[in-house]
Length: 443
Image: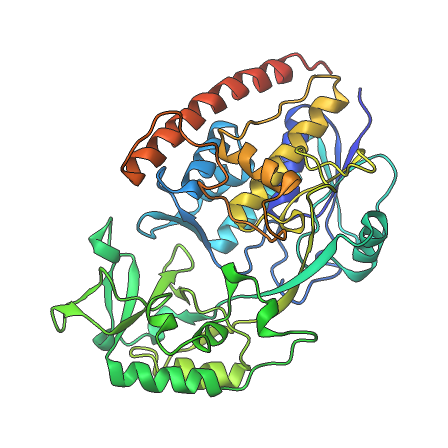
C-alpha cells in the first residue's frame, strides 16, 4: 500500500482533500487543532465550520459559482453532498444550516476507514506528502514556517462576518417575507427603509465606534467581504446600491419598492436564526446593537452572534504554486483553501478537491488530471498559478477567468449557459478518467 498522506486543517478544503485521497484508498492523517485550540473567528467544534455566512451563493448555471458547484457535484465532492443534504431555503442560492452541515461533514470524515483524525496543532510542515489547508487564520507558528519556505510571497488582508439575530425578535409588522423579483419561494425577511430612515442610519453607521483590530486599515479590507461601515464611508448612497438595494422587492404595506431594504436570510433549518445579509462589520458589539436596531423590524432584535473582523492570510500564488496547488519549490507540499488566494466557500472546496485528487493520483503512479480553463474548477486553478495582468488579489470564480465560448453569442445569459454546458461536458470526460483510476486501486 502507498504511504500515508497528511492533511493539515479540517475546514472545507482540508476535508475535501482528505475525502478525495480516501476515495482512492490512500490512508490519510488529518490534523485539526480544534477543540484544543480555536482561531479568533471559530467557535464550533465540528469540521468545515462556516464563519462568515451560511450561503454558498447562487445555484444557477448562468452564475460562475453555480457552475463550479455543478462541476463539484458531478465529481463527487464531499462538501457539496453535505451542503445539499443540509440546505435551507434561500431563493436561487444554496444556503445551509451551518451546524447540521458541519456535523454531517464531521461524521463522514470521522467514520471513513481511510481517515484518521488527530486533534492537535501542527506548528511546522512535517516530512512526507502534505496538503496544508489551515485557512486564512493559520496559527502564527505554522504561518511563520510557511512564510520561511516561500519567502516574500506571504500577504495579509482583513475580512469580517455579519451578525445573526433571533427570528422571534424580528418585528414582522415592519418587515415582510419575499425573494427578489419573487423568484422561488419568499425566503428572505426584508426590512424596508424610507429616505429619512436611511439617512439617519448611514450617519449613525459611519460615526459608530469600531472594535480595535491590530494593523487594520480600510484600504486593506478584501472587497468581497467588506464591512458595511467601510462601504458606507465610500459615499452616502453606496450601500443603497449594494447590500441594501431595494430593486425587485415590493413592500406589501406600500405596494412599491422602498428607498432601501435590508435583507435577512435563514441561518438554520428550523428558521430560528437569521443573518443580516451583507452586513459584515467590525463595530464594537454595543455599537452593533445600537446602530442595527435602527433598522425597521430590528428595534428589539436579540443578537445571537455579533459580527467580527479578523486578519486573513493568503499566498501570492502565481510563480509559487502550480495548477495542482503544489509548492513549486517543494512539490511534495500542496496548499488548499483561502490561503491559496481563492475566495469563497465553494472556491476553497474546489482547491481542496484538486489538491487531494492530484496527490492521490501521484501516489498511485497515475497521470495527473489537469482541468482545463474551459471548466470553472480548472480556470480557478489556472488563475491561482498564473495570475492576471495586475497585482495578485484573492479571487472568486467568475466567467472572466473561464475560456471564452468559441462562437459569438450576443445575450450574456445565453453565452454563460453555453459556457456552462461546455464545461459540464468536459467534466464528464474528466470524471470518467478519474473513476477508471479509482477502480484500478487494489488493497
